[in-house]
Image 1 (cartoon, rainbow, N blue to C red):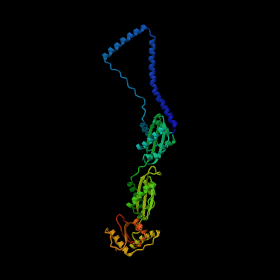
Image 2: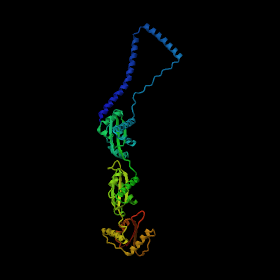
Image 3: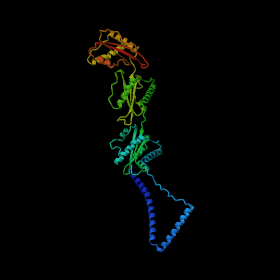
Image 4: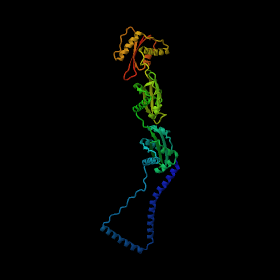
Length: 452
């Protein structure tokens, strides 16, 4: 900003103001001079002439009183004098500066800015801080930058800019001219990306005015559920172009993806993907625009993936101080187990169990036919929602662990804990499968019996 220009303009203004103040004094002085001349004339009058003059004045006064009572002349009232110029309040200066900004943008074929009360509160607070220090600075007295002050005001934005000015003039037009004369300040005023503005004007004890103009490209984010629906619509459209069916979103996977998104945004360590999910491909995206999110998703048009989990968290972090969408997409490959025989499925589960035992220095287990038959019966009852109990010899020391999964090779925690024990010597595995509305690709009812 060309500070000298504003100060010069302010000086001219003050001289004009002083002119209006002096003019009445000249009038007053002129009347005093006139009175003095009369008195000086009185000092040089002859005594005889003075007595005759007094008699004439007395008669004239009586005549005036008679005429006044006869004609009932109305008394004369003097008109109240009004000030030639009213000094504007700081609020009026703010509004006038806002009008001048939009007038300037209109001249340059740019859309008008919207006045933001919340942003003006941030600007006003900074102007007050500068006025108390009598110093122009984008840093507050606490060392906070413009970005940090916006975060403190809980404002979301995509882009931001700030103009600062000080002047001893209260005329908004002169302040605006000074800002427009500076290339950097002019650039903020005429930036086509900005859509809202906040203005704060504060005067200090020395009657200097401190001005803050805060500009933003606003970020109007959508809610989490609305965002998820829009992302799902985008992925479905992308898959349809490749003649692929829409992804099937699973609630448990959605909830876990939401946890990942929040922790990713807060830059916290991420939890491990549950073993029950099986093979999982995870994609993390941070963007201020949902429309751009679809371009960043990888493998959404891969025919290998049919199921998914989607989580969205909206917030800010150091990298995205203005706010963004933090999105997690979990992709699961199609169920390769759905067409396998139960005997092959038992072999896959046993293979995963022995991998864990081998890693922990334990001997491999072998399927026990009798225990496997008992386990298969329990799985059948579970699938049919019947009693899971099954008659097993009371002399056997056994543990029965039933569970439901979409991926038989993904072992639950209870099974993993039991596998690592030394005293397990025999194992039986029973698996039954069926398609359901919630799991159109197939669900597996698995029962594992350990004999100690």
